[in-house]
Length: 96
Image 1: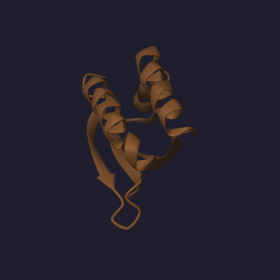
Image 2 (image 1 turned 180 degrees about the vertical axis):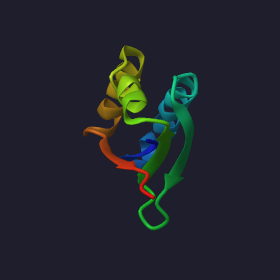
Image 3 (image 1 turned 135 degrees about the horizontal axis):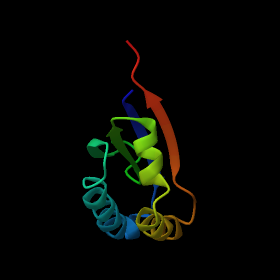
Image 4 (image 1 turned 30 degrees about the horizontal axis):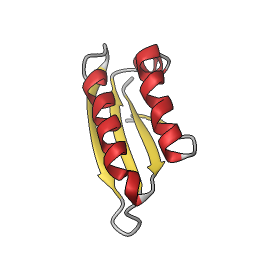
């Protein structure tokens, strides 16, 4: 069953361009992963330091494989260091 992953991040204004670059690297790599369907990046209208990535995968196992990959962990570590906090994840599955 397909899943959507909501990835929430807060970043200081002076680090937003660095975050954008790292997220683009993750997106580029994720597009090559088995089970990847789509992704989009959003910025909160009122709190412009808050970002949301919505990533769609054809299965929870496909997402977990990508989430635990070494190449993703390396970039994600750079993101968390840049943010000064851990990225938040929420996983939702499609329901009829």
